[in-house]
Length: 307
Ligand code: SF4
Ligand code: ZN
Image 1 (cartoon, protein in one colour):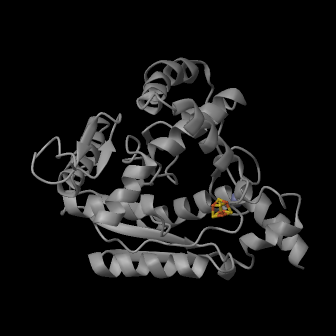
Image 2 (image 1 turned 45 degrees about the vertical axis):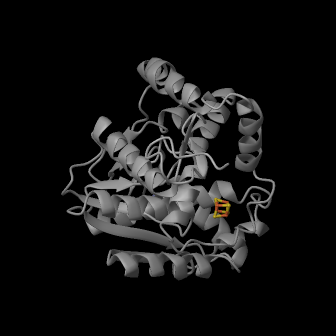
């Protein structure tokens, strides 16, 4: 006999949520998801319900669920969706199409930047020292362009779709590689240190990857069904596998790690960590901890192999 939903007791329960102890039907799951995202936004004072908010959207399940959910629970938000077309063959145009479909459906303003219009492509890093680690320059380029677009669009806050699995995985690998600056960047809210930086928030911090996928599925969102060709064998995939092994039989494991880092370890580390002195990149004019920022250095590298 099918299990009944733990909340409404009527519908057939489709899935286990949160720490694996509760089974919900589709309708109650959507309600649970939206309430939890709202609670996270309010708990960390991420933004006001009528603020101007940029949302970085990639065409994947996480950022699409984030955009749809925030539009639904905060109808007065002034949302600008921000998308970067990375110019990756057999992938990026498909992602852009899904983002356009979703923003059209929600009637949300969309701004797009195409990396190829900047005179290079992410695929071009195959011919550099990053040939086996393309995600590293790709991450730097995405972050820089999204920050730049958010500032130019005048949004007060920028939201990204980092989920619980991403965050906990990155926390563990940053901790073991002693990258404490990266660890502190995983906080739910990052306040700007310069007028050319935006407040950054992670409203999906407490939602698992599976929950984001199911929310997108039940809400019938257009999401990409192709994977990035550079994602095979990446560090983040390996970290995810490790996390799955560590969580076996311990459904609350990810939440325990998140709470340990957010409540104990990050505040301790932050106390000792000196903020890097910010200067202005002499090439692009954006805040940087060195004379030429990490983005401009990667761009000049990839352009040098094209020319
Ligand atoms: Fe960029 Fe790597 Fe993601 Fe592909 S998998 S979009 S290369 S970060
Ligand atoms: Zn620069």
